[in-house]
Image 1: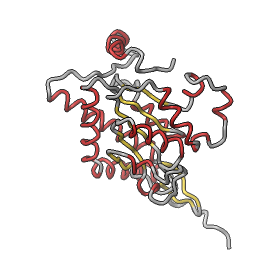
Image 2: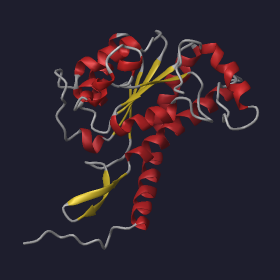
Image 3: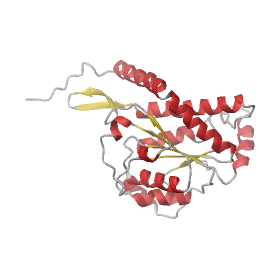
Image 4: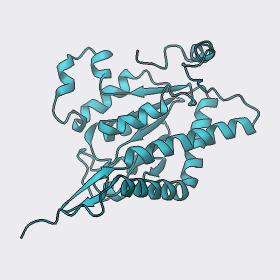
Length: 256
């Protein structure tokens, strides 16, 4: 018997519809979690902290969405596997190590390289939530008393076994869990025996921006000026951003 390779339900319009449904569902179902996450961020910012964002693989997109983004919060820092080379003195070849993100030792090293302050808040993304580096970093985060916000797929992570020696998955260490609504395996459209077109990057970005919106609303309601980036591509952007970044000198890194 040959596999069903029908493409009747595979199209740009079909994916757009699936993504739209996922966005609407996540926005509705995660609203309370977003408010709770924003509360942790506001508390950290008021204490002089910054938001430390981390993800590996395609979850790096979540960290990029949070850190250094026009319309986003200035006191944000992206932690990345490349920090092992740029800050830790490891050879560049390390980044081509197969399954580097599965190594628990990586997570502890990244925490040590990040220049973390006690009031910092962590936002970590992993669709599966089971790789050694992210779970070990989460362990370090909680051992040092930081709030931890996790963005993950509960449909996926609930079906996997952790690769970390503790047996824990990322969401089990979180103070706030935001479910990105992605299905097991991430892809949204079924094409015979395989699925195509992932949605987790879209819904994770949605959740990140929803948290930013709630942080800014909370600060404005309290009569505070939220530290928000202007686009560097508008005339006044550089001067505005440089003045705000100076408040966090040495604590936030921006790639060239």
